Image (cartoon, rainbow, N blue to C red):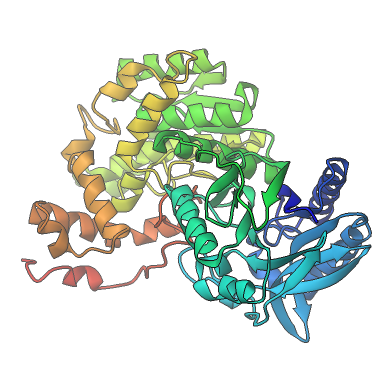
Length: 545
């Protein structure tokens, strides 16, 4: 008997709830695997419905469609073993299943044992945990099955090893975040070596609302050495040889910079959000600042210049260099571009409100009316042209509420929502390094950032410098450090206290913001569920004055 298993890794990009589309993807992949002589083809977790299907899983008609799709796929499981993920109702209980199809029927079902219920995961809301170890015969080899979270725990693979299996296949829907690849590699190396089992780790790829799945399916041998790493952010069927009870040819893990991985995630997230929701293209407000400049570059890389439209909406406070730089980038990228001055619109609003504002000092209200004038124009064009509007705000601004509701926050999707301002600069420099010229004008990167809603306005008039602000936010949001903990690291107390207070005070704005792509371990959205009404901000520190 061969000491190797020929395995096709079906790293696919399905669409939630699109049964016909997903079934066809699966059937096409099966045919390719047959042509390539694979013993088995393995699909990602819940590939029939795509992940996460969320409360669609509560609908009986939805689950009936799953069963029908599974039956259709099973009929094609001839001369090859097919392992496919699906949510299945059994004896009144819903399970996250790996289904084994052979000779036109389902011969085994494995139910996921460990259901993640943290950060972006809430599987206990939908599924019942399985309890049984499942080992199947593939081409004469004994292979155990696991699903995603199971492999992060010690016991499920240990139980498989104790039953004498030759290898383990793991179906996954593991979303991207920074540094996740190394965590997976380290974990798989540990599980494989401590149990002396080769592992095939098959992951989903593609964007789904806030989440982006990066693929990067992995094969490791019984010593935990990396044998194969599938492409990042690319779908495909990759047929490989998995050695059993022997060692294979070791490969080096692919190295990619943080900037490259984040940028690719943002591009794929925008591309899939637009395409899967059926928009013919997108538009955005191009201000001459760095956030909208980076968003435009991402949009063009995701969809092509012919599907992107940019609008500059100058006001009397808009610097000439902002208008020049916006036009320069739009011409360089080849997008449709227009300028619509907002001063007449602003003046009409002020005239309508003159009686209401009589005797009152100018303040942030007038600044917000500028932003909302732009928002009205952009949303009107989005409605009329059918193109989705991208919001261009970053995580630093969204954290402290430095954004205008119904103004610059308007839009259907916010690519930079989980990208701190310092990382916006890093990504802009990275995009300019890719060899096709200065996509983002250098002056946009080097000039001090400004909302340009008042004369000579600079962001640092209202906020701490971004390198300080972002680190305070990271420690408070992602590391759950207290104000006093952060101050103990050398930060000014008043600054830290103010930032934390603004963060909690701005929850109501974020609750009304567009979804955006998750790249960190604690993004705004599914990752973070804070109350809007809360007095916790009054108790941030014992040092509070």
